[in-house]
Length: 296
Image (cartoon, rainbow, N blue to C red; front, side, top):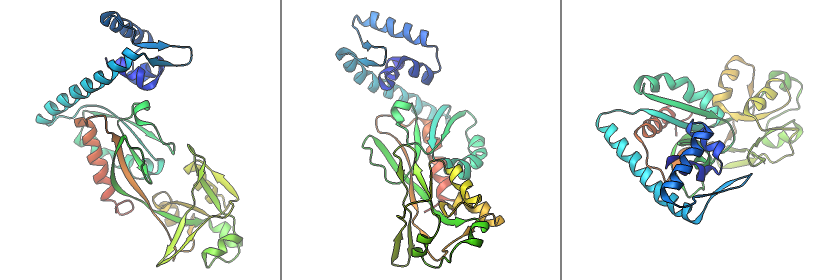
């Protein structure tokens, strides 16, 4: 039943087998046995995609409910024994992973030694159901109606450049002076949308909308470009903190603060939170909210 549901959700035997960590031939045999047992054809198979038949769709809808009930039952029993075990697949933006949660993971491991984490760090927004991800940390507004969204903190930003760049750059006293500078932009990989930082000082606000000198879709490459003296960047404060402390980067326009990005933890509405996923979401939320760089 689980095998069938994963195939429907992912539209592929291969991807479902990878998600469930079983051989594709094993999965095919399970589906054949299920179809023989039910006496109906559950899946349409083509060279490009697998989709549910009419009977398969009806079976999937009921099976998904049953599986969620089983997971909830097991989670309830485990909770009564204060046990959380199993694998949690989680996705998060690279800065959150590198600069906050991964360094703090020893505390989670000591509290929950029976939980195995499968962590993905990237700037790409994943489809949680299709990718088989239990929960994710997202930045910005979350407009997906099938996701539960819980705010947990803020990603703060800083405008900065290298000393080598600033040494030979034109004067920079107000945001409008940025028009005379090399501004480097960050582009979100999934949408190719360019981030347009908004700077604030009191009631005044200035949105950086100028044509950038260069664009980057990798956070690591973006901050490396600033270190190389290519121009001014707007990066997460947590990523730039160490470089600012050593003087490798300098904060520019310190009186103007870039608006922060709200951070949330999300998970599918359709899934009951197992004890292991609940344990991770509670720990991640507490870790972020108690951080001076990430808390509200």
